[in-house]
Every structure is written in C-alpha cells, then in structure tokens.
Length: 320
Ligand SMILES: Nc1nc2c(ncn2[C@@H]2O[C@H](COP(=O)(O)OP(=O)(O)OP(=O)(O)O)[C@@H](O)[C@H]2O)c(=O)[nH]1
Ligand SMILES: [Mg+2]
Ligand SMILES: [Zn+2]
Image (cartoon, protein in one colour):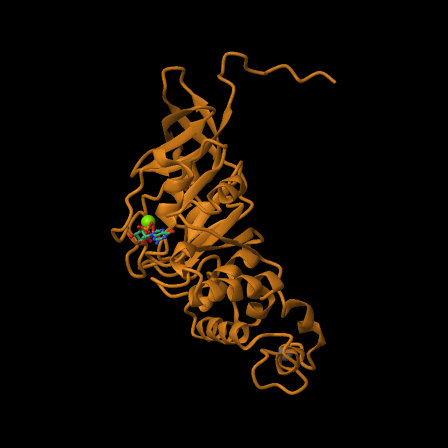
C-alpha cells in the first residue's frame, strides 16, 4: 500500500509531542529529545464544556513547527486517563491535573508519618476508576531496626498483596529496593502520591540524583481551596519514564462519583455487588447484602470496609 500524496506539500508535516509543563500562555512540549515552547491554538479553548483546562501536562498533542524553534499546538489527542479534581469558584468545573497516567505510586511510611490505610484505599479507588495501575510503596524501612516497625511493614505488605496489589518495601535512605522501583517507572507516566513527608522527593532523587528535588521542606501543595495553576511538571527519567510528584491529592480520580459507584472501586467488593438482594444496595444497612456477609465472614476486612464507608459518606455529601 502506498500513502496518499500530501495534498499541500508546502505545509509542514504535523508532529506529535508530550506536554510536560504549562506556563500561563505556553506549553513546554517534549518532541524527541527536545523541549519546545509552543502556544495552543485558540480553537482548543472553544466548546470545552465543564473542563477548565483543555490542555494538561501528560497530554499528547499534534503540533506544527515553524522551523525556527517555535510553532503551535493544533490538537490534543484523546486521553486514556486523567487525574482531575473540581476547580474552585466557577461552579463545578473539572480541572485536569495530569493526563494519560499509566500508574500511580502510592507512597507511605510506617512511622514519621504514620501509615494511613484510609488514604491508601482512597488512592487505590481512584486508580480503579481511572483503570490505571497502582503500586504501593512503603518507604523508610531503614527505620524498622528489626523491631515492631518491621512487623508492621510485613503486615501491610501482606494485607495489600492479598487484594492483588503489588507492594514494594524500600528505603530512599539506604537505597534498598530503589532499583526495583526505578525499573517500574520505565516508559510509563507515573504519578507519585502520598502524604507530605513520606519521602516522594527523596525516592525520586535516589532513583535519579540529577533531578535534585528539594527534600525535607514541605513542598508546594495542591491544597483544597487553592486552585491557581498548579505548575506541576513532568520529570523525565533516563529510562524513558516520566514522573509527576503530587503532594496533597486526596480525591485522586474520584471527581463527581456517585454513592452507588463507590463499591465498584474496591476490588474485593466488586464481584459481590451483583449478589446483593437490592440492585441499589449501598452495603450499609440493607438485608441480604453480599458485601456485609463477606465482611461478617472475614473475607472483606474491617479496614477496607471502613475506607469504603468514608468514601461513601463523601460521595453522599457531594464532597468528591
Ligand atoms: N530514615 C529515612 N528518612 C527518609 C527516607 N526517605 C525520606 N526521608 C526523610 O523524610 C523527610 C521527608 O522527605 P521528602 O522526600 O521531602 O518527602 P515528600 O514525600 O517529598 O514530602 P512533600 O514534598 O512535603 O510531599 C526528609 O527529612 C527525608 O530526609 C528514608 O528512606 N528513610
Ligand atoms: Mg516532595
Ligand atoms: Zn450490598
């Protein structure tokens, strides 16, 4: 098969790029090994409905180059996933923080700060909704010293592995497990999530020292109620991966979820839902509920069920 001849051979061929950072007017677009500063066409801002920002970091875009290091973004290619939240002010608009995520790294520590399974479950639920992978990373295992903290690492590792999630026990400090973590990031767009102080920036520095991210100081937060441009950017790794560090994201991937959708985001509950007596069962007080039955038999843990109830309450109050 031969390609159709170009109907307008004088026009430059469009090329594809990856948006790695957005300033007020222009986007930093990675094309091969280069990063160019390009302006989006005005037409991209028309008819965007509830979406506040039509271009986000992580977007794949079609661009035309002017041959002098500049050019325009013509089109945003369809996204396979997005990390979004409600923007403040202007009604419930959708603010896309990162597009085309492949996986989330849910970073925690056992102590300093304490392990927070509710937060882990929340992020996992968001990943289920977006149908992206999730890897649980327990950092700071050097603090265990063969004691109680080590037992707790084991306990939580087993807990999440039983649900089918991958869990890595690592230490940015000693370097334990850092190579395995690095390998998980190759050729993927990964978002690092987790509480402030768990060591997200430290892990990224251990993976690739050249990144030289600030450690130990509380980083700029995407706080609730603060909805100016995020200025988050994708960091490029030497193995072809890209990472984005997002402190303070609680409702990852859960924007606008309805109460009835929540149980579907808990992997061990999902297969049981159709067995409940009532089709609209919320698995709280209803008779002949398969989820509550599994809870009673210990097939669903109280911890996960509590996380479910917390998310359900947020969905019912329109807080997602
Ligand atoms: N003992 C120990 N301390 C660590 C480890 N990783 C990070 N830390 C320390 O934990 C503190 C917080 O680390 P950061 O990398 O800044 O944490 P962060 O998750 O990026 O925090 P935010 O940017 O605020 O969200 C720093 O004092 C680090 O030195 C580790 O593996 N072991
Ligand atoms: Mg940080
Ligand atoms: Zn039920």
